Length: 267
Image 1 (cartoon, rainbow, N blue to C red):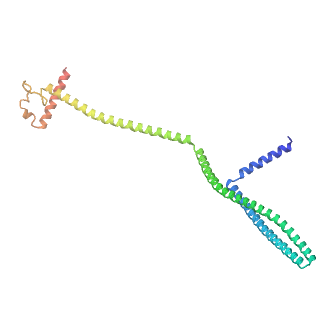
Image 2 (spheres, rainbow, N blue to C red):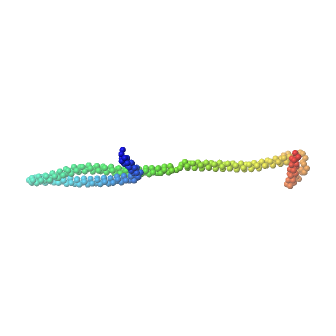
């Protein structure tokens, strides 16, 4: 293969590629319809011209037939009048018109066939144009749908789906972490409240136990317990007087507490 053939092939390939890229289907369809419309106009003009030529040929044919008949009658008239020379001349003129009429008749038959063919072609072209218009509308609709789908696919492909999903996963983990922290804080708050109440309850038990010990050491019965049969200590033989006032009761408790301390120091 020569170098010029290779260069020619490369040039043709590049030109065809440029043409393919530059082709707009919608514009190509419109141009094709315009060209078909131009052909239709030309076809109609050709049919009109053929019909006009047929009419002229038919008129000429009818005229020559009439002339031939007229000279036939003149030849007969001249012969009846004894004018043989005029009869012969009339027959010559008649033959000329008859021959012309025969030629025109053949031409007229050919024109009729040609016009019929042109009319069939015209009808076929009109049908093709109508079909092309319908197909053009369908192709335009399909092309619009294809463009919309192509744009959609381009938009989808341009989206960073992995990054978006990773962001959603990070946010989900963050929400789960916040929920866990919130639950832990709630539990800690509950534990703190329970501990306070437990401290209060525990403190009450200690105070009760301390009061019981004081009572056992001093011999004072607790509320709800049976009264001892032993004699009350000095100063306790009149309970009413001992509990008559808060001041005397407080002084009594201080004395008892001091006695308990003294016993503990001795032991």
